Length: 579
Image (cartoon, helix red, strand yellow):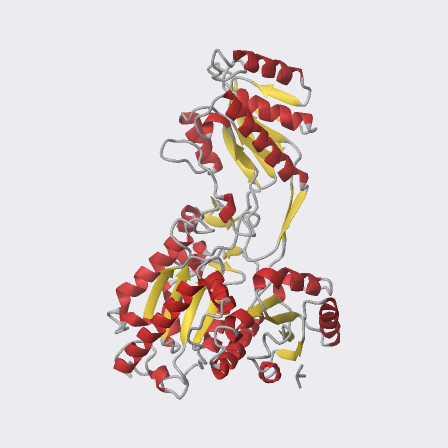
């Protein structure tokens, strides 16, 4: 009885084994009286242990305090817990604390989940305490279902080589090479011309001469003139680079490396710049310059690949600006190599080799160039994902036509498990479902419970705005159930239709504002999936007011609350017209 209180090689798909029997502990935080003023934490604890997988549920004033963390660890040991759900405040501020707490007890930190019942339930529904408690109960149960269905992945690790390649022997390239060499890093400097200096102007020739003499005198810099880079292989931290030497009819080629970082300083864009950009999968703008990466918007699991750009390959600049950029690129490269090694946990896409048909749609779509196509003996290429470059956006999963790609953390089974709880759905008896008039899921809406609205919210936009709305005590209907996504690009049309078939009164998809997606193209994929649903919804009799896609700024809680309220009103109108 539960108590209350490098370039990937071809390998067959092999999912890590999850714990044999889920033993979930639910820890409900009182947050002083900020939660208990609205939510009945005793009732929530009792509801939590109704799940067969929950062996402990309890509440405390502050689980994040030193005493609270100690008590949590005691319960983990006493109850042999292998999964933990913390229901309290925002995962953004406290998820790391609790992951560290469970990891100290030997638990995989990916098996620790959080539910924001303060900003998510208590505060926005403070005028509807019954609705707030029912929603909190369901959101906790949804996270339990999510963790129970989760198969944790094996952490990805890589050593970062402490050597660097600089491509381009102009002012920027030589400056970067010297900065790295002065820091004790071996550098290979490759330039296609027969002398260093690049395209230095007459005014800059003295500086170029000084730099050239310093480079040639530095034993840590190996200069390769009359040479071109012909290929880049490997993965984060260990790149092998093909270099073609010589100007004769039969040039010599060899492979150098491993390199932990590569700095591109090739001068004004030309065919070589484009060739390098293609090999290294770096973005170019309309003029051919190597474009800036939006570092500010990068997801938290993003790891730099170790490729840096400086000088005129980046944008037109004089010698002073070229040097400034070179110092910056060298500094970032040193910081990257200084890590020595990287270990990455969290969501990771994987490909089932037996299912993959080699279409390469995922490779073309991946915004972080984590996917390559590897030839197989049978002639069909295999989509292979570099675990160190994958950020878990799920775009590959959404576009895969044969369901070969899966995403740990947001797999179909995990999303399905959450939807079933959110919508109180039970599989029908065989043969019991008949075609419905008036749209998907109408039969399920004829029950006694209030119609429920399912919200798929991107963590970086819609989910953040929902938390802000709660913090600002902005009210909206309590019949919403939120599924947090790392990226709205994970969505597929099938998932949305499944939600309606399970009885969702409405489905609201919240993604990042256009051109501000943390995953570059995630909102494009969400829009594509939504378009598919819209195209079919009319044929299936789905009322247009039951479905909405919105691009949501993360810092406007008032607009988010108003949007949900307006959408809920439209859903009510639609349901009254068909039920």
